[in-house]
Every structure is written in structure tokens, then in C-alpha cells.
Image (cartoon, rainbow, N blue to C red; front, side, top):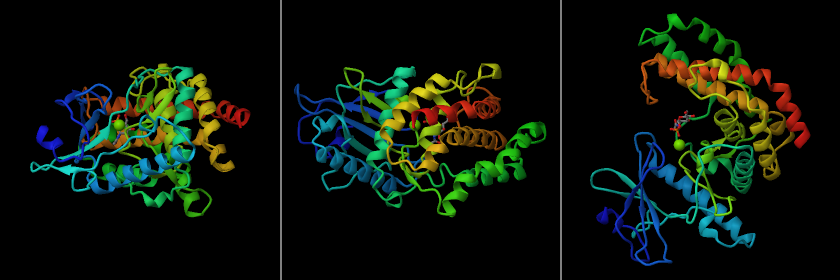
Length: 358
Ligand code: GN1
Ligand code: MG
């Protein structure tokens, strides 16, 4: 690890890296400063099996963090090292170091003091909505195509359905015949759920830079419980605003679990929905009337997309998502499908909240 660190342009003396147990994708280590008051760092090994285009991914992060930093400086903000991630380049000016073993390493300034939260409350949902709204707003004037898709077609509904169709025709695990009800439920909604792509082609809907992993634990909070910094920037990429709004609601505004075996637990948590929307709309001032009106659609879209992704993995014999028991992807599929149905039932309530808050 010392050897790895020696390739980065670290201005101060640091101690031995300590493993940090955050996230399932990359491996992270804290690199503490030797002297109190000096900068500590976060060393990460990038999972290059998930993120195959490391150059594109790191270039995205550089563009996004530089852009936000410029905005913060222009606004006269202080404490900037805690408000946006800073990458430390290698001694030869690269954004990452590739070790002889073929691993990709990067180094950030550690954001501290800061805490993260796992559980969403209405209060933290509102603050998280504000934080992600501000994040999108800060990036709204960056041309969306300046960034690459660090996972190609990640949130493209047409592409996800194409992957499903391939899985259905191959039926490699022989699971298709027992899933007629799921297939029918997905088919019924296909056209509707590809609306965003159609509107984009017709020039009616724009793409923006999205975070694409808008979970509450990707926001760091300061000692007073205020959100200060958005982290986990690997999936930051171009897409529709629905990605970030919808994925937060999919994960947080659900009274059940993502993989709840008891479908009766699954309902839309309208209190969380309202709180996050209130925070989000306060900051996301760049939204067009159509985007705002379509936010409840965005919730259904992301739950539907996750239904299709889990179901595709089930048909493919569980090759993408880690599973905890044999039927896990099927249970996840049914739970996400139920969430879609519940979100359809709550559609008017959501639309009323959006109108009230606009
Ligand atoms: C994966 O690993 P995690 O929980 O951050 C997936 C998301 C899915 C989510 C479903 C890179 O995210 O897109 O919504 O599982 N991330 C990737 O739980 O595929
Ligand atoms: Mg993640």
C-alpha cells in the first residue's frame, strides 16, 4: 500500500492506510495525516469489472468536481474541501495509478469531519432532496455530452427491455414458463415506459448530468446535520432528471423493502415523497415544466426499470446481482413490480404534491 501511495503527489506526511468499510463496489482505505490538522486522504481501488472504462469514468469525476469547485469559489463559499471531492493526481499528472498487478487506484482528499446516514426520515429526506437538487443544478450548465456513460446505457429503458428480450429468447435457465404473469405485467407497460427516450428523440426532453445512485448514504452531513458533500461519483453520467429523483423514491419512499417477500408491506411513503420533493424543488430551479410534471412518472420509471433488470438477471441465471438465496432475484422482481403498481395507485396524490410545492 505504501508503494501505491508513493505514486501520488501527496504534499504532507501520511500514516499507514486503514480499510474503510463503505460500498460494495470499490475497496476503500483511509490514509490518515501524520500530524494533527493536516489533510487525510481516501484511497480507493476501482472495481474495473463493473467500470470497464476507467479513463472515461475518471475524466467524468474530474469534470464534475472541477465544475462544482468553480461554482463554489464563484459563490464565495468557504470550507470548499468539505463541499466537493478533490482528486489528488499521481506524480506524473494522471487521475489514477495503474499498479503492475493491473489494479486501478485513485486518491481523494478525505472529507472530514463528516457523517453519513443509512435510515431515511422525513427531515433527512428533505435535506437529501436539497443536496441532490443542488448537485444537479450546479451541473446544469455543463453540456451533458461532455461526460461519457461510465456504464453504457445504464438507465436507458429501451436498452434494458432489449436485454430482457434477449434473456427471454435464450431462456438459458429455463425459468420463463413459470413467469407468464410477470412478462404480461412488463409488456403492458413497455410503450409507456419508453416515453422519455421518445420525447428525447423528438427534442422535447433534455438530458442532464445525473448522479445515478441517489441513496441517502451517498450524502455526507456536517456536525450540525446539514448535507455538505455528495460522494460516490462513479455513476455520474448523462441522463434524464427522472433517474435521480426516481431512484431515491424507489429506495426511500417505499414502506417495504426492495426485496420484500411480503408484498403487502409495499406502499408509497407519501411523507418521504413530499419531504424529498420539497427539498429537491427548492434547489432544482433548472427544471422545465414538463420535467416537473413528469417527476411522478420518473418514480414509476425507475421502479419499472429495476423490475426489468432484476427479472433479466433471474432469467439469465443470476449473473449480475449478488443473491442471498436461490429465488432472490425473482422475489426482488415481484417486490419492484408491486412498487410500480403502488406508485400507479398513488399517481394522483404525487401529482397533487408536486403542484402544491411548485
Ligand atoms: C446496484 O450496488 P448498488 O446497491 O450501489 C446497481 C443499481 C441498482 C441497485 C439495486 C452499478 O447498486 O443500479 O439500482 O443495485 N448498480 C449498478 O439494488 O448496477
Ligand atoms: Mg453504489
